[in-house]
Image (cartoon, rainbow, N blue to C red; front, side):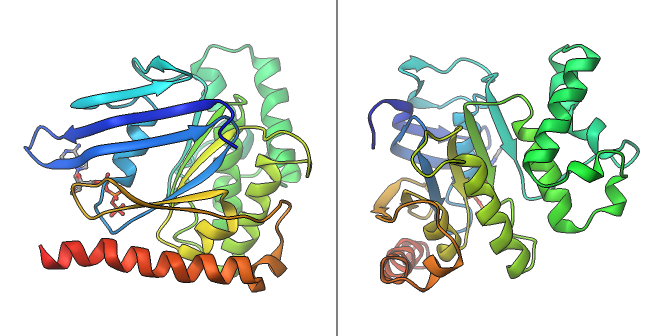
Length: 263
Ligand SMILES: Nc1ncnc2c1ncn2[C@@H]1O[C@H](COP(=O)(O)OP(=O)(O)OP(=O)(O)O)[C@@H](O)[C@H]1O
């Protein structure tokens, strides 16, 4: 699976300017095209890891490598999806989705074409002209995913994107995300995904590997491989592999969180 490493964190520390040590000795390797989730207690540094991977922040010690090269500054071919879809309310859905291309200086006709294709991909083909306020929460999140994918990034970073949604919408979006990541069962992944969540079930459903981080200062304390083929649909949530992985991660996360409680 780890045929070629796409992102590597080697002995990474991040101490913020306030003096707070958020990450200490973080080692992570994410293979090209892999789908990996990060689980960990609140405040353990999951978002900090994503910012380092995106090149939006720098490690205080250690190395962040992207395709074997030291990451320097924001990485162009990276899409980011946050918990809030943050669409511009005064612009229609297509204009929101083409924003990253506008920032790159792409010409209007190619922006429009790419935005329509990205909206089609997430099932919002008929909503290009709609205002964000006409969309449900799940549809807004689909638009945010289309915006992150409009530049066809090779890395997609997702920071608790579905946490605010109801469970049925969330499950539907999990399945849609897997379709985007691996459109053909035996084909290559369209991008590498790193997904932060507090939901064990969501992490298991989506991922090839789940990394568990300890309480602050965060570091990787466990790794669970989810040995199930894709495509995965709702029936996967009833399978032995899924239930066993959930049980193992429940224990692991409890141990990781206990460390905080003890101090
Ligand atoms: N820019 C910053 N300056 C100072 N402290 C920060 C900064 N960013 C994050 N922190 C602190 O670093 C720690 C890790 O934060 P981070 O957001 O990475 O954790 P997290 O695991 O994503 O949290 P959560 O699960 O609650 O979203 C927290 O204690 C947070 O308050």
